Length: 178
Image (cartoon, helix red, strand yellow):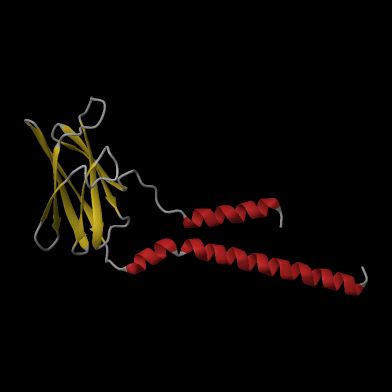
């Protein structure tokens, strides 16, 4: 097999198995003004589904370098039908030392309104956005992981067929006396 062909096949395998890019806190959901603050919300897993979830937030002041580390942050998650969930963010649950997070269980699928409340001293602000939560279960996890071994098996099958073809071709050439 030509080197170019092998490289192209390897590139296809890698690109077919790549998931979306994530920051330290997960998938970027929104970056919005919240009064005197700028709030950036990240979530994991991606896609969001019923079950365990992590909502992480970074807070900064416009025109000032660095993140605000001592803000009091709350999330209010409101489903399209049902009672809101109020969560307090902390550094203890965060995957990055720069973020504050709340880890919890999303009880239902659907569109959820996420409101982020930020307070630091006398300053306060809030912003909102929506996230879509899919059904839980292992089906999504299987489809997130399945492409990698499947592509490997396809590559092995291709190599096997190629070698078999080359052996048969050599056998025909030898038997024909060439």
